[in-house]
Length: 284
Image 1 (cartoon, rainbow, N blue to C red):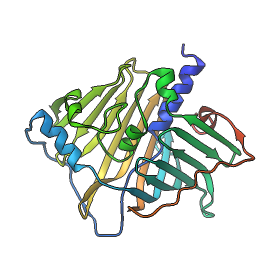
Image 2 (cartoon, helix red, strand yellow; image 1 turned 30 degrees about the vertical axis):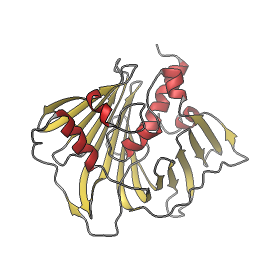
Image 3 (cartoon, rainbow, N blue to C red; image 1 turned 60 degrees about the vertical axis):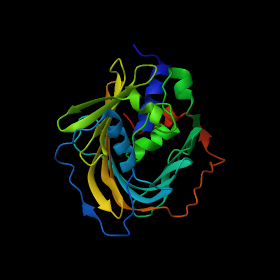
């Protein structure tokens, strides 16, 4: 039977894995890109190099995202609008807005050091250190990995970027006309990236060795805009402690490289609690 600390850490991991999406600018014309077909034969290193070369380059991302969270075996769930701001290597922030009045009800901010959550409905907030995951559970998953997950990019658990010396950390196979790149962290978490014929990550799977929690993050509805190829829909399927949560995230008009001001202040009169305490109100 899992103890309270184990459940807390699973909540944290699921929390990190399931709240934000990358999409992109809507200023210029877009064309839908098919990822059907089969990848071509390549050397081990060339597979990794091509995936890295195909990643979207950006300094900031901002705009609107439509979110739908579906719990358990339900076919539909709660739908909300949100405002996303990403400043590369500095902060990821998602502000969920109340319908019609466009007032913030929930804010998530993630920096390289910490996670900040403000729940305005309950007048509570939480601040927790990202490094607690590694210190408490030995999980090698840092801000850069999270940012890569949100931006349809390849990553190595615990590292800030994928360098040439990291290529051999991936086991590469071909299955169903797609490349599968797999690596593991020091506690046995498996990270598998499915690569489509356009050299983009079409799925990311993160699975615990004991099978008690997993993530399947799907990237779909790719479009090409200027020199960028990116997904306009993402679907995160999280299975943890026998609970299932699906988060569907859709583009509603985002911009690349705009100058951003990101408010990361905390309300002085709210009650401070843990991240898991806040999540328990939303994940049943």
